[in-house]
Length: 180
Image (cartoon, rainbow, N blue to C red):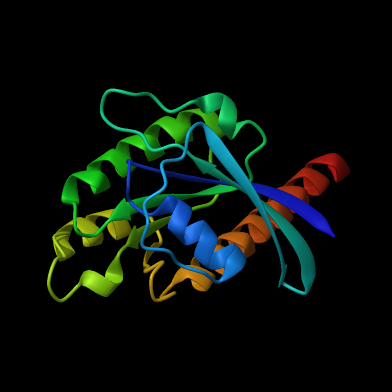
């Protein structure tokens, strides 16, 4: 069994903790909890016929006045950037956090989760053009709802698969360099 550290990044109140609670414990609560610093959860799964334990670091929300605490990213194998589909500015915050994380982590796999998809009919504010621009930039976008569970399992499964595939490619490159 391998263990992988992943982080959830995003603005305040976008639903990072709720996504983790839905994924790890299959529960959702209407009450808002502010994460102070970092909260760590663990989940076991199978991906690419391999048993994996995810160490999920739920980082405190960020805004334009706070910088990402890059020390939390040490040893990260991948991350999920979470935005709130009812608050378009949270997508801009997420994009800025991604750029900051990328400077520290390099080219590790990531997923953009646009949360609160259950509110698409009445309160959705993220424009299709914003999502398309991210996809054109190479981001994998998944619409999620911690409330209904939509896209939650898929987000973590896809990230885990991407991490394992990236590590396999890197190992092959390293092995090829050593044989030449």
